[in-house]
Length: 170
View (cartoon, rainbow, N blue to C red):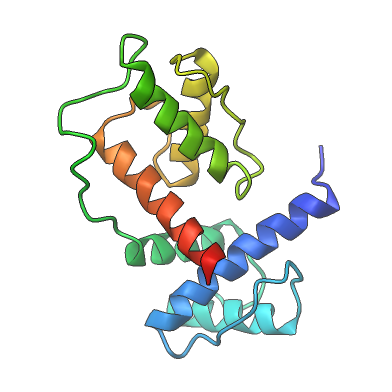
């Protein structure tokens, strides 16, 4: 099954957003606008990124380039530890409805950015659908497999939510 035009634009916009953030930390990467169009400016930014990261500079975003861009982006988005989700707590079906509800709301908000993450039911119940959403989100963040939602996962989710929120308010 192929991607719709809207999904392609969303993925390109995500790539452009990552390159935009990277360009503030690496001045050799040109600032580009996240417009969802893989035009000459995006191809040039990708080509420069590839060259600097010992990837053949084609200007095309293959899986190696994508993974490297995401890794570079995430290196600038390292979250500071948050005290609202204490060390040792792991979400489970027995967790408080309030904590599960908060996680579901944050995940739901990020589903607008990542169209390939299934939206969780916002119910305060740790369901199979909530687990699937957590796993999908963590996979996008480079953490493959099935995951328990612990303080590390909370910090990743909170950092991504904060990065997306600050990006939208600028």
